[in-house]
Structure formats: C-alpha cells, structure tokens
Length: 173
Length: 312
Image (tube, rainbow over all chains, first blue to last red; front, side, top):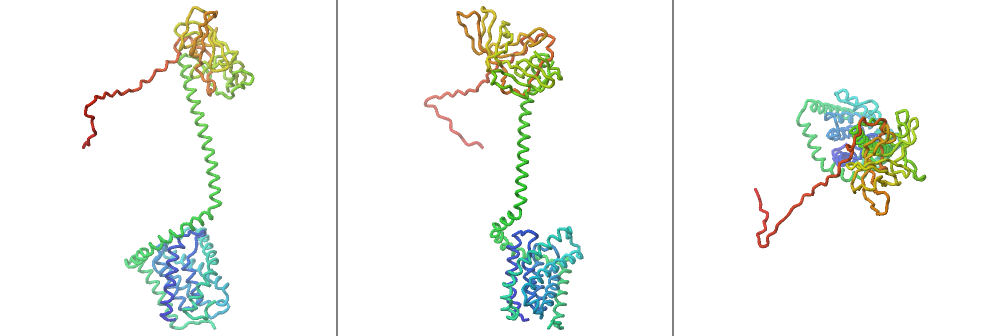
C-alpha cells in the first residue's frame, strides 16, 4: 500500500462517482436500480488487501455520504463501507478459490452489496431514520442484488485491469 | 495463506471507523462544516447532473416506456372504456336535454289551455313503406291513454291515438294521408277540413267559398264532441299559400304544420279537455323581426377627416 496507489485510485473513483450521480441516478431503473460506486468499491475491495479495502470503503463511503440522495448523516455510509469493504477484502485475501474465480467474486459482490445495505438500514434505524415498509425494503434489496449480479461481471473485467496496474498484476483476473 | 492482519492494519481500521463515527456525531450535532460539504458537493455536481439528464433522457424514456409497457396498455384500454362510457352518457344527456325541452314546451301549451295530459316518450317511428305516418309512444291504457285522443307537442297538434295498448299506443300523425281534422282559422273563425299529405304540409279545404283565407293565417283545431278525437283550440299550422281558382267549388290552402314530425321525442296525450274552449289563446305569437342596427355615415367633400390622437 502506498500513497501513489491511493492517488492513482482516486481519479477512478471520482469518475465513477460523477458517472453515478450524473447518469446512473437518472436512469430510473426498475427495482430501485443500483449504486455503481457501491458495486465498484466492493469489487475493488474484493481484489485488494484488507487495508486497501478499508481505505476504499472509507473513500467511497465519504463520496456516497456527500451525495444529495443520501438521507443519513455524513459518515453513515462511510462506517458501513469501511466494515463491508474490509470484510470483503478479508474474506477474499489470500484465498485463490475466491480471487481466481470471477463467479465467486460476482457472488461475493452481490452478497456484499446487499449486506451493506442491510447494515446501512440497521444503522439508520439506530440513528432514528424512517426506512419505510418491509415489502418495499425487500423489493429494493432484491432489485439491488439483481442489478449487481448483472453489472458485476461487466465491471469486474474493467476494474481488474486498472487495479492490476495500480496494485500489481497478481490480482488481475 | 490467509491474512491474519497486523497491528498497522488494525490501527488503520480503528482510525477509519473512529473517523466515520466522528463524522456521524458531528453531522448529527449540526456542525455547519459538514452541511457545507454536502452543499458544495451538490453545487459542483449540478452541471454534471444537468448534462447527464440531457444525455440520459432518451434512454430513460425508453426504459420507462419498456417498464410501463403492460401498465400503459392497460391504462389506454381503461381510458378508452371510460371515454366510451362518457361519450354515451353525454349522448344520453343531450337526448335527455332535448326531451326535457320538448316536455317543457308541451306542458306549457297544455297548461295554457287547461288540458289534462299524459306525457309520453316516442319509442318508435312508424315505417313509411306502407305510406302511413305513425309513431308509437310508451304510454297506453294503463296510463289512461285510449283511442281517439288528441296528441300534442310543444308546438301544437301531433295527431290522434289510433290504437291504445296496455303500455303503448300507436299515434296517427297529422301528416298521414288518411288524417282529417276540422280546423278553423284564428281570428276569422272560418272553418274547413284539413287533410294530411304525407309531408309536413297539409291541405285546408274551406267549407264556405265566399270567405277568404290569407297567407300567414293560423289554424286551430275546431274540436269534437266531448273532446274526442280532437280537443278544441289546439294549434295546427300556418297557411303558406292560397289557391284561388275561379272555377273551384271551394277554396283551398296549403298549411305548414307547426310540429316537426321528424324530431318528436316527447309528446302529450290529452286525456281530458279544458272546461272552456281556449279559443285563440293557443295561437303561437308571430315571429317579431329583430331590428338590425344601422349606422349612417355622412361624408362632406373637402372636410378635414378626423385622425386618431393619443389620449392620456
């Protein structure tokens, strides 16, 4: 882990953030759509070490908290993503059964995205937020899992290339 | 080999989590810097979002259309059904309005004369293939309608009840070629026989050749004994032309019926006549010509023509 790697990663995340806020949020995809930055951060973490995963989660979380569509306090998504990205990176790190198999990464990403959202909801409840009906929550979670499963295989190839260039070719899929 | 983590890694995680919790605390306590961060981000993102909206809108519309395809079809079908129903209601309303107008006018006429009437809707127009002019109404003997009763519209005579059934009745129209009625000319009280011709025009044959009839004279029913088949004083029509043949035994005139038989919707059957003959009271007023405003402009050659001036 070096500062150079972090500085190189930042523009990529910024571009993804702008794309998410400027374009993806306006597509109004059925089933609640997806958060590209969240998927991107989880996949990035799945390919990284736990420290990088945690830092990735921190950066992506701050960006998501700064989004106008985020109802929670600043730090809400940050906390969730630090834990989620660290956990994803921790699960995959050193296990070639996970890292070497794109299907496992896609599965891990889909589970990670849904789990992050569930933790976000629980944390939101603890912070006094209104979360709506259970049916709607389940619908949104299912939609999120669906879209993540659709997008992850496409993103994986795109992400693995810059990730390998920044952090070393060992993690390239 | 599985990653077990080291002190540096643990410290990083702790620092990051504490930072996140610190941020949450600051935000929940309403620190302005945090709010300013979000506002600044949104300000910076607005141009990107505008551009994104412009680029994405065709795709978004497409996705929305695809997503709502089934629902849109159902909605269109539902709206079409609703539209048809509303059209039907509107049509019924128009018919009802027209019938109401007719009913009002026939009630006015009957009320003016003091007739006791039974109002009825025209439910069928008789076929003219047998060269008769008839209508069927939805009132019959159960409503007090019997044969040989006078039938009125808001304008005047319609015809006479030819057959009465339990809940309907067949009306012979005044335009029927077999229809005959004793008529008198309003004012001069000259009498004659009016016969239908199969159209809205009838022919009046005066009984006295020495009397004169003029164009525009109004004809009224002379009335029958006990008011059946015709009650007296019912307006029939207006003289449109008079034929004065020197060799003719009797004078004849063409009469245009007041009632338009093709637009009958509601009629009234006179079940009981007035106590006294209404005489000429039911003659419709002659149309009063509406004066047209005229403007006369005098122009004097050489005079200065007025020009528009600006007023404050």
